[in-house]
Amino acid sequence: MGRALLRLGFSPNKTISAKPTLNRYWDPHLARRCVKLNPGEQYLSTTGEMLVTVAGSTCVLCLRDPQEGLIAMLNFSLPTDYLSQLDQKGQSHARHYGLTQLDTLFENLRVQGADLETIEATLVGGAVQNKDQRICVQDTLDFTRRYLAQHGIKVTAEFIGTAHPKKVYFGLDDLGPQVRVLKEVSNTVSNREKRYSTDLQARWLLGHRKTSMQFSA
Image (tube, rainbow, N blue to C red; front, top):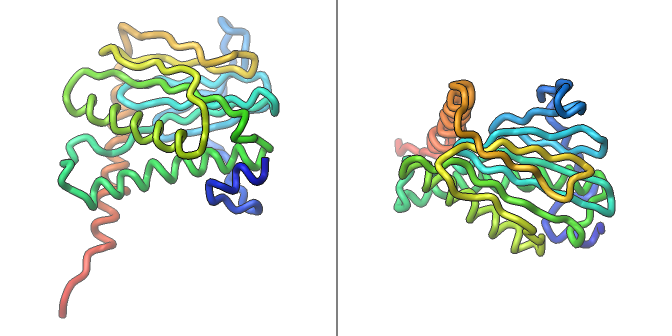
């Protein structure tokens, strides 16, 4: 296990903690304790709690290590909407954000004892209602597929397409996530993703450009 995960360049002594602000609640219909992930959040679990999120215009990566009894979920997207393919610096910053998210997720899995050789991955693509959403979702899916392929992680299923958001449920006893297409959603979903997209643009595109500018005397 240790040798397999060292291929990713992780430090064996480095620990990255999960976010403490995730929303936890009891779902009476599922009769389960749930952890709700918003865009940009990730979490792993070794207990019977259900991981829940919505892929609006984002993508969701679900990981499962059946031997170690671990599941993990990441809801994210590359900030490539409204970004030209000719903007190489912007594209590089967007990919760096994706790499940071995925490296953090797999570092957390490594700390819990996961093994790359037994991890199973499922990809869920968000809604595609316009050109910008299509580019963003496709860029994120392609980037994630390449990352997983480079490290020998098997993708067992993909739920992509449709113009509607998808709600994702993932529990430790599930062979894979349960995905439900949402024909109607509240404004909360779109508002949440707009805040996430705005924050990504400010921190990973505009912010990096500001700090990298050089001025001559």
